[in-house]
Length: 120
Image (cartoon, rainbow, N blue to C red; front, top):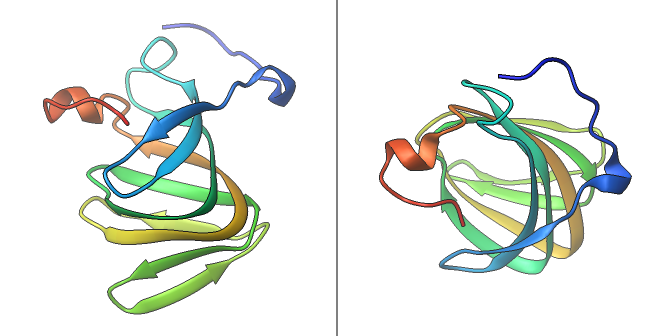
């Protein structure tokens, strides 16, 4: 593993990620090259709805919104500065009527490998 590192926003490249229900863009910044435990990065979603099952623990910090998240208990409109906790097993919809962007941190970093799948 590596030592401390600064990741500058101007150097982060958002790459297309295709899910079963919609497309998004992700800059996977912290991966298993940096940490044995955590993953982190930026994600941007625009004018789409993505249905997802979280199979890891995840925290979102909303950088640009609004981003509507729909859980079993209803819809929650999240805006810049809001923090969201998504425990493993959460089923949700990410709903963007425009552009939304957030920082995410998740555990474990190798969730996809452990489940025999690939990240979108």
